[in-house]
Every structure is written in structure tokens, then in C-alpha cells.
Length: 173
Image 1 (cartoon, one colour):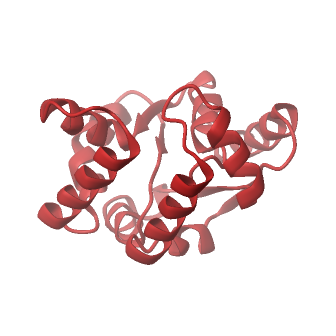
Image 2 (cartoon, helix red, strand yellow):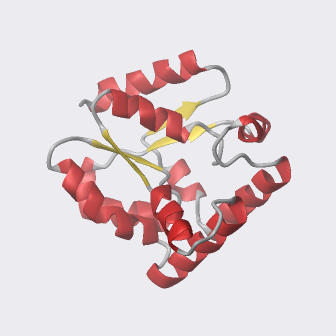
Image 3 (cartoon, rainbow, N blue to C red):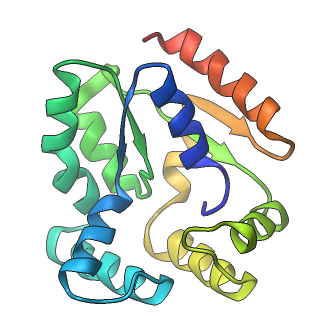
């Protein structure tokens, strides 16, 4: 969920040699291409339009060429896999070579973080609306439920780093 710490964990993987592919880059690029301001409302509109056009696995489909190219030289960490359909699409494509890491934090913790972040800050109302949309419309619970690893991010960066380093040591670089 937004504010759980997915991007921070993905950056930790990148520091250990993984190529980081942020699914949201597709949204950001499309928002800019349409001449819109980068904000929650425009991002949501574009996300919904892309999923309407390409299906619920849209971001996996649109990022697959980037993933495959990156895998030619490195392991990959995907930042922002959201829907069950995205997971199934990638699982069908990569089989046992995909490992899913869920990053979890309570709504209170996430909403406080989202209000403080520099890029794309969200008010508690925006965060609640985004949570509801992602749970109800994106089938976001499935990937969290079947994750191979769960990072609980309720304390500080040191604990988050320790958990991520453990996972990296298990999955290897």
C-alpha cells in the first residue's frame, strides 16, 4: 500500500546490484505526455485508463520489455506491482524465478509518512481514497497474501534495512 516503504526496499535492493524497475514510471510518463500536472487525481485517471486499455495486468505487460532487457545483465527488483493479474502475468512468464516481497505498515504509519514525503505527498483523505481504490478495484490483496517474504515496516530505517538485507541474502544477487 502507498507509504508502506516499497520504494525504500527497492532502493536497498538496487544498492545491492539489482536493477530497479518502478511500474509507476509508466503512469508518470503518460501523465506528462498528456500535458497534465503530476498529482494523485491525474495519476489515478491515467492508471485507470491504462488498465482499461491493457487489462488489469497492464503494468506488467507494459514493463515486460524493460524487465527482460534488465535481466540480460542483472537481477531485477520491481517497485510497485499492485494487482493480482500483474503478479499472475509475471508468474506465468518467469515461473519459479519470481520472488514476491510484500512491504506492510499500518494505515496510521503509512498516512503519516505520506503526508511528510516530498514527492507525491498525500493527505489522509487522499491516502484513504487510494487505499480503498487499490483494494477494491486493483485486486491488491492477492499479491500481499501470497508473498514469499513479508517486511513489516513499523519502526525505523535500520530495521527496514536489516529485513531487506536478509531477503537479499536469501534470494541472492
